Length: 310
Image (cartoon, rainbow, N blue to C red; front, side):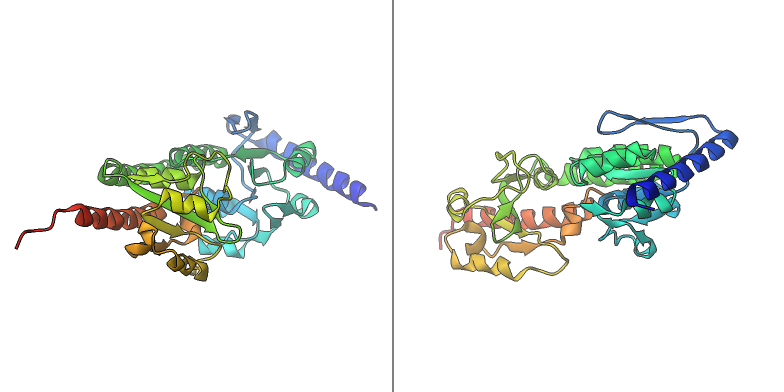
């Protein structure tokens, strides 16, 4: 049997299973509009869910649907229970045959991270796909709410949203109106990459009363040059690499003592999982970032304070 026949057979088996299940479903139809503008319709709450992004895996757990996850992609490592689930590939390349064999009744897909053609193929094979694109801090509760509705875990989702909104409001009240600090969030070193104005990192900086020195750039993870950094003179440089260890390239900035962040000792690091994943844990990263920005703010205030006369 060739690949296409195998996919067709698996799809037919999945469709038959769904039809049998819907015939006995007692609950009302669930309808949710996803971030692509498409309606996702379920005859009953999803019981077998696959997540195609680590951030969506975390959101599913926050929504109370963690025990319904049957498959995830690589790097879905939080919470610890996610590490025990079947991996169906990476966020940018996944195994359709394996996905079909797991017979999911819902797939959570990442709009700009997953290959669009492959996600479209999953839909064509009869799978229910909810496409998400959380961009800002304020969009995270909406994703939790919708996933909770699709999984029938609204109560748990509501509790998670309430806690998230309380934590968000607390940080906003404490820092958002504080004196502005020039911040650069560095994603990588070669090439030198930062955070533009349409990214989660920019939102985090604004929440903490900072100003992203590259917030005028529309590109995602824009490449910049050294001269641009020197000209914009950040007061804080925060590294956010690819793992939880402080990247050695952060110390390369010590070669440029004319930068305020270097001169005043404000080179810092935050685990990228806390600044780049659109999940409730991003507020943990926000709290750390706010503290770092506040230290740079206090340094500036001390430097600007007039010296006392003897």
